[in-house]
Length: 518
Image (cartoon, rainbow, N blue to C red; front, side, top):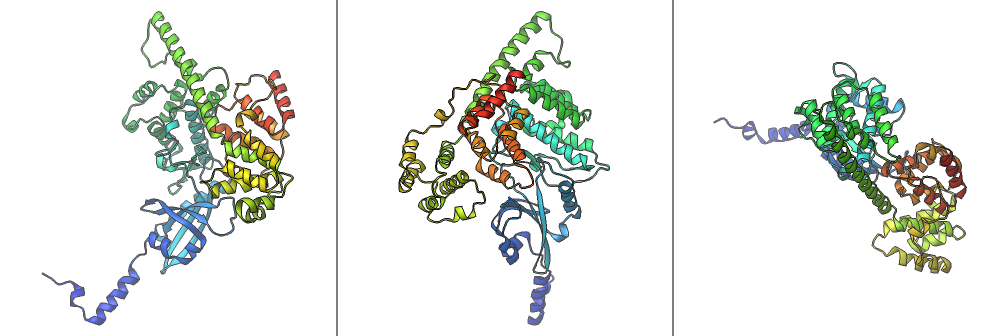
């Protein structure tokens, strides 16, 4: 048996071989991330979240002064020899030609040399809500309104990609992300295979999108092997509305353009504020694919189906209402309420009492006094989650000499703030974009009190406030759109309760006048 070359080498040759092996040995992506000084000077809290043949994806915190409102990032780290030049070109195209809220945001590309080996780091917006394949939002997939919002987002995102004469080329459940646990906005990511339309066409993208929706949103795991007619039958068995089935089948057959699909989905969404649901009209009419029935039998079936749908609607509205109530965090509303009452006090003194220093006030960019007090309390709650915040606030306010507010806390309840004597037209009708436009025109800087009362999270407010390219009216409109997206059941009464809480009674009268005339 032949001896290994290393076993027959003299000592000097062994040393040379060791040097040669070390010089030619490829450095792994993980070694680079762990050991490269420049990389670790730029990023902290680095955690691997995905791995593939191309490299690895990490979540990280940017240590330097953020050039955007994004402090936390997703980093795609790739060894240079495996990097696709087209990926950076496509990312740049997607963001230089406009923007779309359903596309994961590309930030920048950085190159690093480590142990004479080159690595690329793509900085991207981080999505913390999971993917269509696996997400905390999966329990909502059966909700009709949630289904419509997912479909609308996916269609809008793909339509934007196609408008640049590009095809995604790699649509699947793992490449479609949810923005966060609180924000179920769907977003396309991973543009490594994105290219100009050629042998793989836009219609192929559309078919893959339909397959992905069928597989993950409606849980038909073997949808790829099913005939279209069988897919439609199984979706009906899952009580999916006929309107949605028509859209999915149209996309799957490559017969329905994205623009037409978007119009149909938006039409279904517009029907939601009304008394009923498009499911009633869709399901009482027999599908052309169903066998014919006698008139008496079909009439009975229509009555039974209508009753089932009405029960379903009532149940869903109740669930949505509970979700809305759960989302409105009592402590957050208390902090907001107190911030408005504290506007005449010293934020520096209050900050020292709660946090022991004045860092939050010094770093606070807003000049809006109540918001400074809110940020102090919000930061304090995040730093000390184990405390009984209500009781500790009483002590802090006593030290500040605000005994009047201690008494306010003792009698405080969100329910009491939701009650007012103003009667409005159609209180249970869902609000629409025109309502948001009117609000944005008539509510200025104090809009944060309104949207916070409706459950908008502080990180969403910070993101909107950091977008200096948009006007205050645009930020207010986007805030309400985000609330409506999270809570499709948002109605006129909810909005008026929030406006009344924030002392915008004049806006309630303005809206109500328009509702009476519409």
